[in-house]
Length: 413
Image (cartoon, rainbow, N blue to C red; front, side):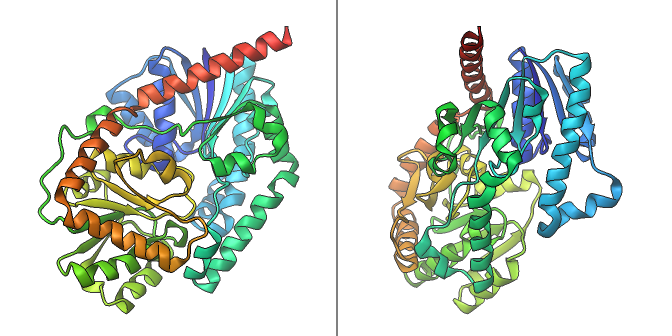
């Protein structure tokens, strides 16, 4: 199959969306497909270096970016969506030029995959695959009171944008033009207009490289050492973890919490830790190189990730690959990812902030006081990680694409 892949985020050696774009591109080519990728020009140095070190047959990259004067827009949240939308329009024009000289079987928009932010690749007149998409998740209503007033307003604005997204002609066209929509969570599926749900398929579309998976769990020096990794932004729920950690400290004085990441809510979160009296037991490491991130995983007893409306959650898979049990909320991508027996999902439906925080604290205490339970979770985590390799994830995805494409061709004959 000859595939044209639209991957705004695509970079080797990275997690999150850049890693998703890179692995879909490379694994598709390794499966024997011919793959042309349109991505941002600033990804070129890392991609060229990786391709020189380990060439992949049938894989070609094409770079497009907006003018230099607009680059500052993507650094701030205020103008980021405008930048992204304009990039998508320019990427479509670049794709149209490619299709004049080559015949593609399918065009696939893979990153960023948020259903309310339109791709224009469906206008190429090719069979169009969208996703896996997310974005339909929302903070459970009773947990909103845990946020500062400014963030509650931000969240209300986000939900308003979600509700009106389908009045956007470009969004409706994207959904109409696609013949297959992969979605990550049930919340996103229910956000799709009913008329488009028939062609939607559940698929997380994220995986792991086999070489990063540990052979066996590591010895943990502190059974009450917990780790968080992710952006320091309100909807990631770190404030809930800090409140739960403060409860844990009353029963386990040796407990520690390590925080990896940075973000616009960092000062609020640090101030909260100080107000809770746990600042001396929380280590703020900032944003680390990927090699140092892996080292941190092996030093802790469990991973705490109480994100309130995550679509994906690749970091959950990464934690499992390092034999780290995961404590998350039972909502969104993390809950979809986390297999039974590999950690604890804290219920959130119709539950107050206090109830959720109490359960987070109880989950942390359970792991801290029961090394046998933790060891069994760690063993199962590795089993789960080995069952979600990138090569299998992409292969399964494109079996679904081939099936849907065959059905589409039969229908049009």
